[in-house]
Amino acid sequence: MNVRYFQRGIAIAVGSVLIAASAPAQTVSPAATEHPAATVRLTLDEAVRRAVENNPDLAIVRLGTEVEAARVGESRGAYAPVFSTAFGRTGNVAPPSNFLLGDSGVDVNDWFSSTGVRQRLPLGGGTWSASWDSSRTTTNNPITSFDPALQAGFQLAVSQPLLRDRRVDSARYQYVIAKRNQQSSELRFRESAVQTIAAVKQAYWTLKATRANVTVQQRSLQLAEELARQTKIRVEAGQIPPLDLVQAEAEVAQRRENLIRANTGDGDSEDRLRRLIMDPADASFWRTHLDPIEEPMGRGELPDIDTVVEKALGQRLDVSRASLDLENAKATVEFLDNQRLPDVRLETSYRGNGLAGSQFIRSGGFPGVITGARSRSFGDALGQAFGPDYPAWSVGVTVNYALGRSFEEASRARAEVERRQDAQRISSLRLEAAETIRQSGREIRSTAERIDAARAGATLAEQRVEAEQRRYDAGLSTTFLVTQAQRDLLQAQVNLLQTTLDYESSVVNFEAVQQAPAGIAGDALAVRGSSVVLVPTPTPRGLFRQGSGGGF
Image (tube, rainbow, N blue to C red; front, side):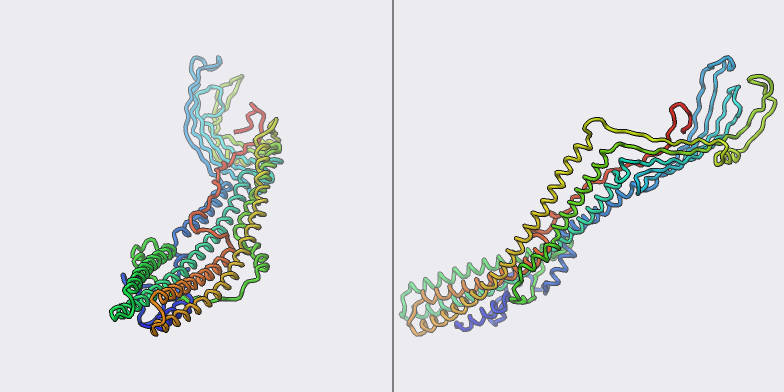
């Protein structure tokens, strides 16, 4: 094997940026030979698609958006109408309390039912209720007028806050926060997706680089073995001392170790890419050999960093999430401001009552003598309940106000500090984003220039190896000098590979940091939204003087 053959293999491996050479003497890496039947030819788009579909860490964040959507549904449940009903029977025997009852107790038996609907209003913070009740009562009380007595009643009531809770109450506050948290979780998922895709691209190009490095190390080993073979022939012919053969064989051992390390790095790189794109349910995927077939686009146009920064600051997902956090903080301050107001409520109600059953007809003085009975149906009671016969209504205002420094005032002071913190956090994120983007843009320029320098160094190293090999063939050079030239060529080619990988990585990173901060994808970005607290719907019943009997 001559030097030109080695140079041609290196040129194919490195000149195509990060691909394995296709020369006839190329050997396949162990990762490919262990499972030759299970090979996936993978483009970059396919790797990204598999990651979006299969990556479990990204799925965690995606499910977080569903959690936040469920919290929105929980908070909206505060406005759902609440239906309630009750029915039962009671019996009560009371001791006699006046002379008309004699020695007998008063036995009262009831069948009763009550049904109602109440709801919190999404505007204004008020609540309304509509309820219906009925009963059938029997008694042995001698002064009763009905036995059995059929009663019916229908009531409408509204409670409307006038100061506190009118503009915003607990239910509306929770709903607004839950909606913003849902938007934040969607932005967080997009942020995680950007970082996952960037990680996949980085892993893809790293695998390309490690595959090319394996090829470089194989070629270097073959060249060292060829030099050792030629040296052995010359030692046996007495042309050079045996020490040169020892040196050549030691170089072969060193380059064989380098190849082992390169194969190990190739396996690690393949596993990193598998981890990002594999389906966790498919255990056989770990045994699948990945063949990255995508070719890099090569050096592109250098970015205008100032223009990119100005545009990217309005698109950064972490800044958008911080802005939603600031809006939530403002909503908290507004809510607590409202909670410091007096609790002034307008309470109104209207109730219609009806009474029917078997009505006793009496004559004479009190309590009179029962001379007959008149029966009224339950329909008569219903007509009275929905008519103007026996109305009961109320209109009033209630006022409640905490004296001294209230819990809401202390909470409002804390919330105001947190609002200012969120505002400063946005400023900090914008500065950090600008710095990161500018640094990433300079990295593209730097690595692009380094590629030119590394390529020039590799070309000069190739020329030196070729010249040294010709001198060695003519007996004008030594094994040591040829070996040193080969080492320099190997290092130059590896440097070119690393520089090319650095350029591709900087391009990927520059694209990613325009949308999201650099970081790892996965559960570290999972949503941690606030919990929704159940806010029961109160039942307005109107405002009546105690003991007046106007209410239920």
